[in-house]
Length: 166
Image 1 (cartoon, rainbow, N blue to C red):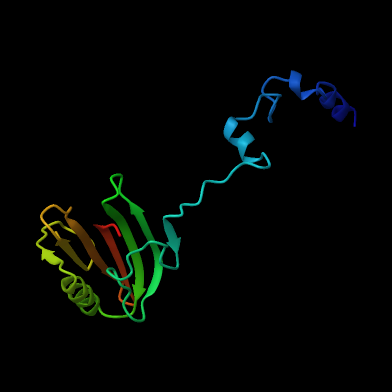
Image 2 (image 1 turned 45 degrees about the vertical axis):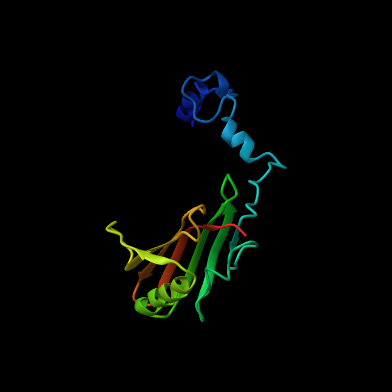
């Protein structure tokens, strides 16, 4: 017991005065950790130009249609700066084969005046087809890329591009 008393006699109860003591010593916290714990910290704004699980309001559903049986994962529709075009994105899940999904969009967009544009861009997608249309000489060119990824159990379809506003 005498040895324990001798050992503890050199210990101090005030850790702020002990050099190298573990733990914070009155140093201010980083701004990130302070902000994370502050009640009422505003969350990022919701982007009204996108939707999860449904078509967003303003999405050109009559042009870029959803194949029967496909599930909408996400969509977006945002006017370009000059307002002549709308940037669109549509992500789907489907059990249909790649060929059927590619044919669905080739037929539908073809009927709307889009033509397949040759592309030599390498892609990790199973299928990638680009469609373009210029409705009138003074109109901006519209383009849509339709990509299909086959993971052997289902197909993920992503469509993105610019179409005429309105």
